[in-house]
Amino acid sequence: MRFWLIAIWNTIPRRWVIIALPVLTPFVLLLGWWLIAGFFIKPPDPGFVAAQAELTRVLAAAQTGDRAAQMRAAVIYRDGLTGKPDGAEAYRWFTEAMKRGDLDAPLMLGDLYARGLGVRQDYARAAELYRTAANFGRSVEAQYLLGDLYAYGRGLPQDYAMAIDWLRKAGLRGHAGAQSYLGSFYENGFGIDRDPVEAYVWYNLAAQQRSVAMSFRADIDPRASADKLKAAFSRLELRDAERKFAERRKAIHAN
Image (cartoon, rainbow, N blue to C red; front, side, top):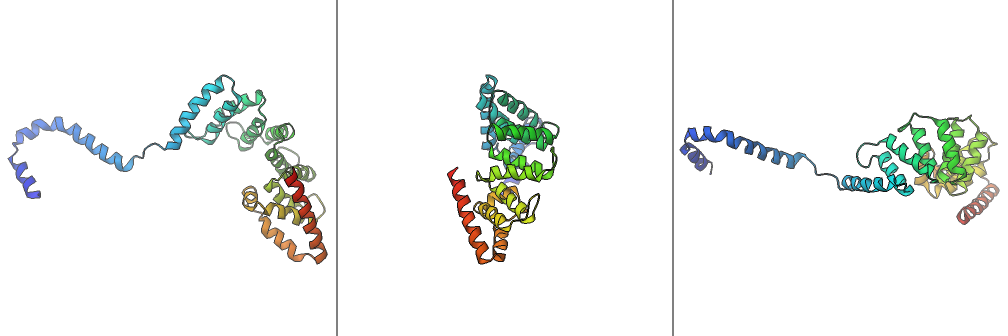
């Protein structure tokens, strides 16, 4: 095959090659680009394309004052579903939704302030927005985050009693992160008398959703913590702890 190609090439007059070269060169380059693109250029991600189409659609509705569309547009911008995150646009649309009474918008805006995404980081403002979401929207997530700010003194004076109050509200509504957090407060006596039985109850509740709890506090393994406390209990303490655990779990499921 190679010899036939060489023979054919040798029969072509050189002047034809010189004349054809300017015409054929663009086609050869185009063919080369197409072959390289096939190997190295990836087609657009379907999720990316879908998000762009969704953003175009929801923005049209958001401009008319549709609260749900405003929230969805803000989430798309915040999470960078169509490219890089755009905190400024996320802030704009969460703010518009909050003006129209959306109960989740204060929590989302508080998160932007806490992260410093699209706005200057401001824990005090985040705390105000979390409080609004916790009180009026009854957001369990906002209750947890407000408790966390009190625990660390971010944007608020450090106040373990207030931290426990907000974390308890979230924990009694089934928030695994808050339950694990409370377990550490009672185990270590942060702002409260040490109470291993109460710590065991909260840890054991969090252990029912261990992976969720550890997504909030990776430094606390509620199952390991509960087992450690359990091993040190007397028979009477263990019976008391299991009774309290059963009662609280029933109360949480009833909410």
